[in-house]
Length: 306
Image (cartoon, rainbow, N blue to C red; front, side):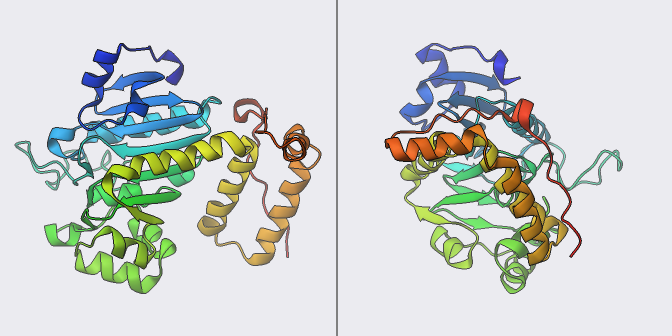
């Protein structure tokens, strides 16, 4: 659990995290989670895929640990926004082919295999998730990032959902995420060709929000997360995110969304956070929101009949 983290010395922090770690990550509380490193600092959790010598190539252990980190962060009131990134010069170069067995071999246990191993997916959480794609993201490396709410990419890195060129098919719900983030035509081109593209094209296609030099990607993603952690009410962020993604998942009509917006307004109007948000605006200061998802959260209701 996140609350079991221990403070590490500067020397230990540097060796735990790996290469090219910004100074931000040498402050605060860290936890070594083998192939995933977790830091919580001022409301922002940074989850780092940590196999830099292998370009953070994906393994089953990495997927298990990332899934657990997502669950821990979503349940922890000290975390208001999540950034997921990669150590070193890549985000995730795809499946790990370094072992004696190929990750594309027939699974020993068909019942245990899932083509969507990250559970929960980032879009199934209540906390905002920003993917700081600091370098190459290929195959499952990109399809994991497609599940985030926001993607900041390195402009000169290579991206692609290349699985069809390896004799398999795309994973991590990318047939759904990519079609919803862009459109069916763009999704068809990217998924059916398996071609690669750079950060500028990722933005042009609607796959990424912004392309920056690689050295600036993590800092910019943390800046977005820090703005959310400081200025956005936790309950408001959670309700907004769930309504946004649930509307797509469930195929709600505009009037069904209107019904849910009205019901959720009744939930937050007159709340302590609503009063604090106005008071902070009038006093020209940062808000001090006190809603806690661990105790105050109730799942979204069903839309009323049209």
